[in-house]
Length: 192
Image 1 (tube, rainbow, N blue to C red):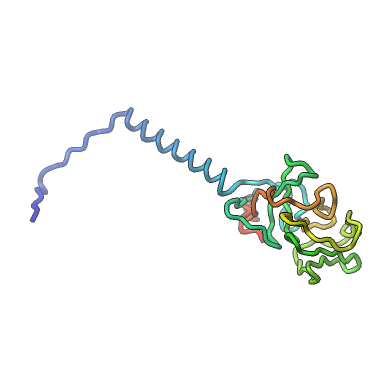
Image 2: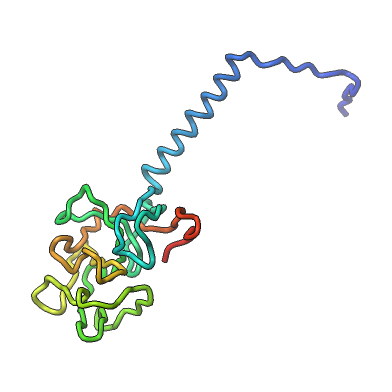
């Protein structure tokens, strides 16, 4: 059995100023390194430029983008780059189809078909003949291997895979999946 002398005071040596500064510096360096690793490999911040994703996203919305272990899926909103558009200009778009899937535009009924089935898209803006634009010669195309076909939710005002200026997106140029809007505060929350 161990007996403690409760009447004896424990003396704690005061820290030297240099020791305190070193501890704060150490915390700062570890924090900066953690933030660097987080935003280099795990997630990034992106800003919406334009209204091609309206009403889902608006110009200047600030987004959190997940990078690590991301596999492209139909319906995901992504940040990507296009060789045709320029690798220095990130785009925010929705994946309509992945490699091997067939995409068809029904111009009369304002519908997109993937593998013969119409997409249910309650999020799109419909309203002018601009949705009918399509640079491809035939009405149905097949997404090449290693690529995705993307479109903006505001079909009337979106430069996307329907046009040769953007074309198919190489999966290597997908920066990540948009998972959260954190600004403006009135739109704070997950993005779908």
